[in-house]
Length: 79
Length: 79
Image (cartoon, rainbow over all chains, first blue to last red; front, side):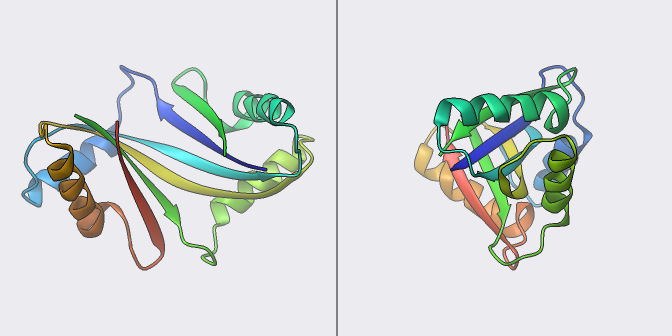
């Protein structure tokens, strides 16, 4: 079973990488870009076949390793 | 208009970050994890209101700056 985890910075948390992209886009003459935030995406291939159990395991992985829940949100999507 | 760009490594391209996550998950006793690949996600807030034009602009941004199309795939999603 394939799953995708998306980890993004919470609102209000400073995102220097996003700001750098914003400035680079402006330097390349892309106008009308208001805000850029960068996060990460983690594609996981699981042996588990029960979607419920897979989702529970993935949430636990996020809490324990993949996301820093103080400053980051995560979303789990079974595909 | 909000958009999300997902940049992932192409198949066959070595992903040391993904491998590191795989090993860390195994060390934390998560079993049944077959493969992990890491990519990035870029959330962009655009002034453009026409979805067609926005998508075209975002694809151009990916080609010119956000993705290295030699080793990476990108997906544009208007939200």
